[in-house]
Amino acid sequence: MKIDRLERTTRTLAGTSPAGVARGELLAVARRLVGAPETATSWRGRDLVAVARAADLTADLPALDEERGEPLLAALVMFEAGVSIQDTAVRLGTHERQVSRWRETAEGGRA
Image (cartoon, rainbow, N blue to C red; front, side, top):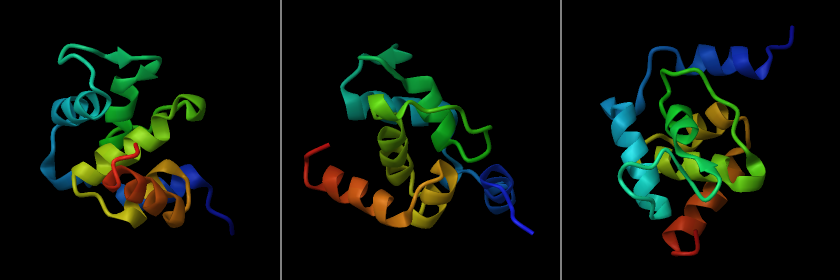
C-alpha cells in the first residue's frame, strides 16, 4: 500500500511545531532573511505568510511557488527554527540532499 506525500507528512509531523516557535516569529524570520520590512506579508513576489505557514509544522502546508524560491526560503526559516533536515524534507516534499544544499548555500552567504 502506497502512502501519498500529504498523508505521510501528516503522520510524521502531527502535533509537532518547530521548537515551540510561534507563526509570527517564523514570519519575522522570513522577513529578516529576505530583507523585507517588518510589516510585509509578501516581498518581491514571495508570499512570506505562506512561507511561515510552511515552516509551521502544525499548519496545513500551503502551495509554495518554486519559481520564486518559496520552498528554499521555507527551508531556511525551518533551519533557523531548529527543524531537522529530515523533517524539513518530508514537510516540503523534497529530498534531504536538496535541503542540505539549501542550508550549505545559506551558511556560505550565497542565499
